[in-house]
Amino acid sequence: MALDPIEHDGITVRHAPDRHRYELADGEVVIGHTDYRELGDDGAPTHGATTHRDFLHTEVDDAYGGRGLASVLVQFALDDVRAAGLRIVPHCPYVAGWIRKHEGRFDDLVDWPA
Image (cartoon, rainbow, N blue to C red; front, side, top):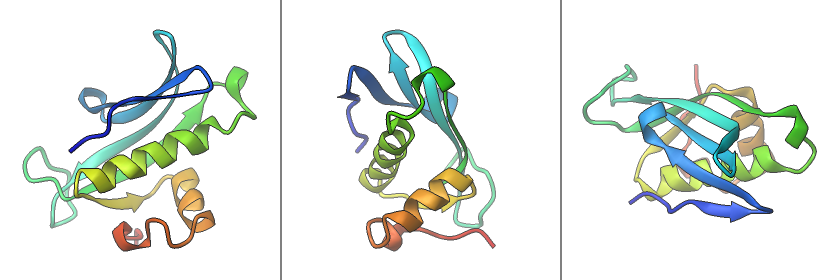
């Protein structure tokens, strides 16, 4: 079950599965995102039975920096992965750092890249 979009400080946080990313939006303008690819049991990209979301890249527009929005975005994305019954592969340095900083919160879902 996917999470419904949330509002944080006037910014919408949502999943955009057709674009394989989670987004921050100010009105209709996307101001940040964390991109992922879906993986199967064998660790290969898949369009079938997904078991993992492999996070690749996170960014927030500089004009919105310093507000903690990247953290809000990643927390929403990882909560959504949990709700979907999937596992996390954090190739993105920001996502990996966020998980380490919040030790214990998602440890049961993380498969660290080799």
